[in-house]
View 1: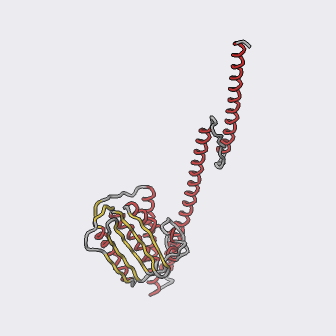
View 2: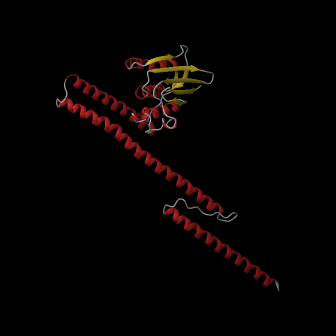
View 3: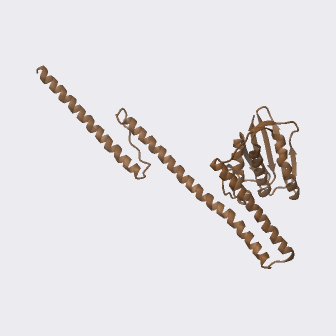
Length: 302
């Protein structure tokens, strides 16, 4: 066989190899296209089988990664939509129920169906419902501002002890009115940390309000202490407490629990408190032995 024939044979071999390679690539592309059509039609569970050391290996891997990311985003979107629907249902219930009750009481007063002490009681109950709605709307606005990133924070070095005294002093008349004994331990020595005081006021008020409204307690203990690495605020009560199965969720927005401590309100207050404390570089946790003791612990890093 002369050199010319050898060259022809080699050329034909190369051409045949290229044709086989092209046919293989076309087959792989058809396989990829088939999977992509299924993904396009909404089947995000489809994956492309990756052949090691194949020319399409990286392409298949990237497509699988993109598909997985899209699937996760779709799951998050569906969860968000479901959470939004649950939120709207809860908000509707939290507004409609007290509003309908308040309207019913006031209509009875207006139509003269009740008189004397009973009339005064109806007005008192209506006023209580109105205060509840006012508090609920304020919390809802706080939640919307936090969720949308519209809450404006202003940080400065402040005395945490003095800020805490300021908040607690407003609650003492309410403790006394509701016959709740209280013990307050706040050091006289300054405890200066960088903080947004309005966010701290709101978070601490929300925690105390949760105790007042939901715990049915007759004793509250608040203690603030500083160590070398942190400042710890402990707030405890002897009320009905929180069940073990509900504890992991009480800071979730709109969580509906079986415990009477959690079913009387929207659940926004503690959720807002946690988020505002996080912004202030603080963590909040809770422990509870029902009908014995519930303890909220807030820790500020220093």
